Amino acid sequence: MSFSTLGLSESLQRGVAQQGYADPYPIQDQAIPPILAGRDVLGIARTGSGKTASFVLPILEKLQEFTVTKKQPVRVLVVVPTRELAAQVAEVFQTFGDFVMRGVKTVAVFGGVPIAPQLAAVRGADVLVATPGRLLDLVAQKALKLSSVSILVLDEADKILDLGFADEMKQVFELLPTVRQTILFSATLGDGVKAMGNNALRDPLSIEVPEEPLDIEQIKQTAYRTTLERKGVLLRYLIKTGKLKQVLVFVSSTRTADNVVAKLVKNGIQAAAMHGDKSQAARTETLNKFKAGKLTVMVATDLISRGIDIQFLPHVINFELPRSPKDYVHRIGRTGRAAASGEAISLITPDDEHHFKIIQKKMGKRVDIIDTADLALTGY
Ligand code: AMP
Image (cartoon, rainbow, N blue to C red; front, side, top):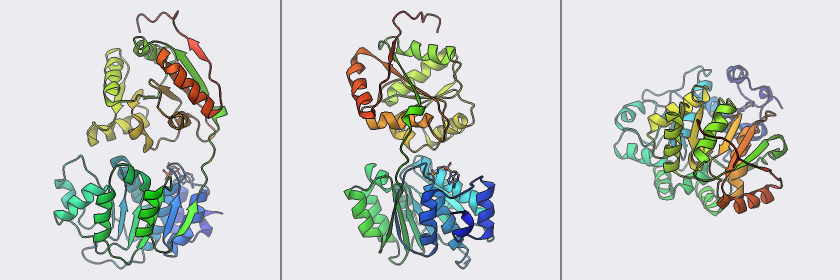
């Protein structure tokens, strides 16, 4: 299929071409026509599948049909679990919204930043992208009403529930008109998501895009045997001697993230931490710098990293192993996207050896562990 056969107007097709999208991804093939036709959709798809454009494009198309009223109340509401996703989704609406004749105002709102500027910003928004808590705060402060929403999108519904927003979502549903189009995307279809779907969707079309199997073979995996005491200096040694330019380092706690960053910076390596205790402004700045190649190392916890859309990374380092083998594959998968291949490095202490064996068994691939006991690390 091509974008020209999906029912999008020429102006949006120009937008798609300008973004360098040659052909629609499978989720877009499947979701765009029914959304254009006004159907509810239940989509099982992950970040990276192209799911965002699969709802943004048809929604923008439909927005052109709505009459423009003086106050332009919110027509489209997108509920997302995290601040990062809110910003990413709003950006996609803005990018393609520029190609829509009548102009589209998209606003992203989320917690962790002062509410005052948002009270004013939501006025006149056509599209509102929001995390559940802040959305309810804005309604409570009478900054906006949800009674004119015609299209509701629930993006990453499983994560919305994982983060404990079930009650907030119930309140949101009560504020919305019952007659509307609803689109629900989720990476997984557990009981909670099913229940939410039953409550929110009407005769939905189910779409599932099987995840492309990650080709682990093309990812170079390396592991180094070390001790807790030598981990930090080994990390710096690997970054400096390997002349690594863009490295995502995974740790298991906020505290470790901060400690690792402090040591890297002290030793002349540009680094910043990415975790839930950082302010929104700091997180956005870190991510932008890292994406632009202006920050050598980003040290992150799993929760935060999951929603981050970075297509390809040359190096991922597991400073600490994740608990689940699935998370391990998810982490290293960031270096093996789109026919490009990078390297995933794991630092293994004696306590990790058994767990690392389990990870290798689950992933079905052996990784040799290189001993570093004789490595001279002084000076790094
Ligand atoms: P998403 O799953 O929505 O986060 O999208 C993942 C990435 O794929 C984003 O960086 C999009 O810009 C990109 N993308 C989405 N659709 C296409 C397409 N049809 N062709 C090429 N890239 C795309």
